[in-house]
Image (cartoon, rainbow, N blue to C red; front, side):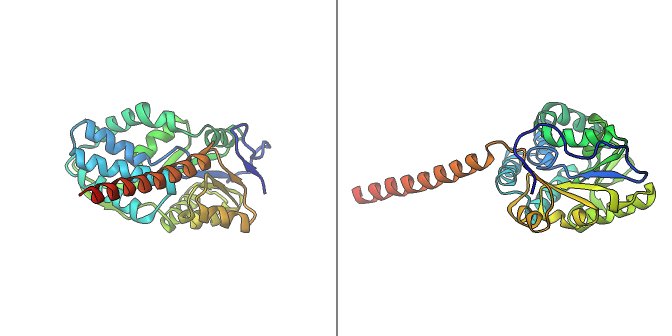
Length: 270
């Protein structure tokens, strides 16, 4: 199976596309390193929208997200927290915040390899959509900055230009992504059998299996195994990630052993 470990050129077809072809990209850990919503929370903290303790919680979830991949409990926890913090905030504020978040935090975390894949689809005339649990406002800004076709994302309820703290529909995650793409395909006259989908997470299997060309990017362990079993292309743009992860685990283990030894010495002295 083809597996890229360096960022060179995209491997999609360079011939003119048939009508109805498109590519769908997940955002977190697929298009960019880490969780985009973490950076939204970080910027909200900078603007004093919530407390340091809340920001620390987001930071820990971001760390575990990068280290072990996407986890449904973390996704829902982050989303619920963001909704509660967003209650009473205006749409204009979120628009401005989203622009700042992209420029200051997200732009530098875009995986060049994934961006190259998206750009090659665009060059041959295919639509390119982001499909993500990230708030649609942020996803749309990312899409606009990368000159993509558009974005599907989680929608917060708005009343009189102010977020209510409730969702419209459900978080765009797991099966909901596949359903959203199917609805978009009907609207845009897309033939999903001739479309591509890219994701890092096993949770996006419904999206990946909805198209004719599923691709795993920076996959978690379960998706990597599934992709190999089904002969899907796998691309990993995380240079040195495995070595770093092993080193971190070794350092953590050594720290626990050392801390335990020091604690035991103190107890003996007492």
